[in-house]
Amino acid sequence: MPKNCGVISATSRRVGRAFTLIELLVVIAIIALLIGILLPSLGQARRVARTVLCSANLSSITKGINAYANDYKEAIVGGSTTSGYDALPASPGFKDTPARFNGVAVQQWDFLGPLAAFLGYQGPGETASSDLIPEEVRAQRFNWIREFPAFTCPENNITAVPWPSTGGGLWSQGRMISYNMSTQFTSTEKSTALGGTGTRAQDRRGYTPYLFRIGSTSMKISVFEGHRYADQSTEPDFDHQLTASFGGMFGGTGPWFSDNKELNRAVAPGEALGSFPIPTFFDARRWAFRHGSKNVAVRRGIKGADLVQGNMASFDASVKLYTDGEATNPDFWFPTGTVFNGATLDTWNYTKTNFADKVKRGYRVP
Image 1 (cartoon, rainbow, N blue to C red):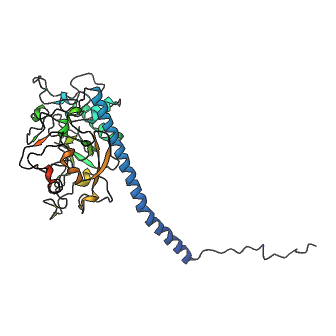
Image 2 (image 1 turned 30 degrees about the horizontal axis):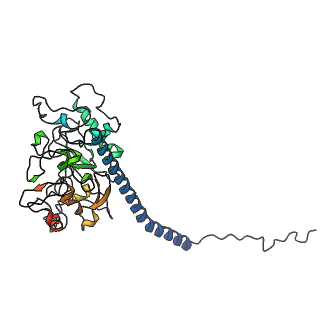
Image 3 (image 1 turned 90 degrees about the vertical axis):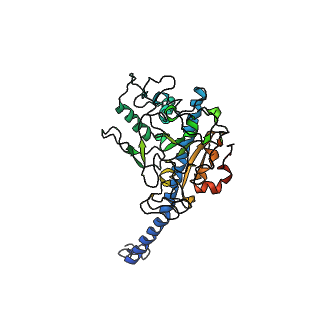
């Protein structure tokens, strides 16, 4: 009979032992603590990734703007006298010709629709053969543009409502247009009916929207994050009229102007309403500049300009993250040689303080 028959060796014996309740609770607490530590880092990493993707979009759009200019004798896309010519209220030289939707530019300031067509992307309207394309198709093209991935900031889930309300349901609320162009580069100095700004307080020396007229491509901003239209008392909406003035759904003066509707700083610290913010007012900056160290609700307001950051691309296709205050530098927004004729430029208090020499009467933009 084998020597160890019927005997269980101590070394072969396995004694089962379960976790106690205290040990389980400790493990759960450690896991919860690790999740609490890691989640903010993961969230910040996602925000950084979205900021980088947004930057890449702006760079690609600007490269498209330059390619368009190269093919169209230096014309800047998005100008009422360039790609938006057909949508002018009264086409110069053809005053009996009514404004019309040509299947590409949904209004005279639209730079994204013509750019998409130029780059080979086909959307609603382009295959229409009639000069009288139905309004329904124009609305469809706008919806296609504002959801087109290459034209959309990944941080932009902001809803904009139509203005004026048509009542017919053709123009509906939806994602706000992510990117804007400055009308200082896309307009002339003629009347708004002829594709201009209608003002000579900033003398742009007979400027017309052609690339060779803007000056230094590394200094001038081609495309930037913004909202159209919003301020401290108005949530984002969009003027969908074919002949909309002052940049329409796609453009505006640029952030320097103290009453702009694409990056409004009215309740920012140091501004008129920033000293005593009223709960019913919005801090509209977050709708425009959607990046930064924290995501802060627009309604609650933001303390400190460094928290509000947005991407801006210059005409050489380089992109940089700016604070909302830095973005008001007038040199970014006017063609080289522009002279300010007014007593002072109508800018934000931040601009008057930080760019004092650039807002005075007689200043010539480099």
